[in-house]
Image (cartoon, helix red, strand yellow):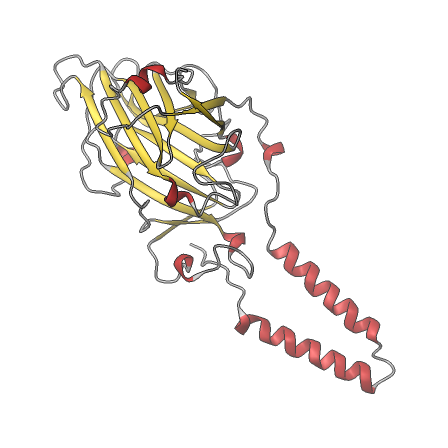
Length: 326
């Protein structure tokens, strides 16, 4: 694993000393002109900008047809119990069925998501077809991807958040920051995101894919403040000798917890604001009930790689002030 990069005053001090030496030489020796000082400063500035790129556009690396979704305002309170029985959920537009994360082909079970928002939270409602609903992991932040699960990724320009949940309503969550953001002037170059001593996962990609932006730190010890989550099973959980219909998942993310991802956008959002959000499902069982060696990944739109961690492939979610169903 690679340690986080931090450019602080202690690291800058030798550079300042070098500049001072060059300035003295320029003043006392005709062979060291001011041009040499200016060139050194220019090279230093160029080197820092190259070492710490910011907000580069990598979308050209991922030429996928991306989904667009309009997220409406809820007309009333949402009770997060996993049942999705409020009238607003019946009125909210449903996504198209999730497709294979690599190929874009349909999954063998139907998976869809709907979204709503109000002044307090952003809401997700998943409907998951599953003839045998099962789950094994019960400890928070277990490796939920070893069970059947649904997942949410919410992206900012330089960081993103990941949540996974299984049919036992056990969650796993991580906050990811691109490692080029550990530098002066970055909103993440603050004590809260100091990687030293933290419970981190460090990746440059998943499933053999390497993102061109490179490494990022995943904070496994960060919890989304105020998160609410509920699951309802339409059938019998972990009873393997009957046929179930599936399960539903309901999530509520308070806007206050989005401050590290907002990039100056209003919280809650304004009319026509756009966020990049990915919803997915990972399935451990094949179409004939066989255990799969590698879980099938189904996403809102194709990623082209077996990797959920590609913000450039996340769906465009358009927010509207219009009340759902009106």
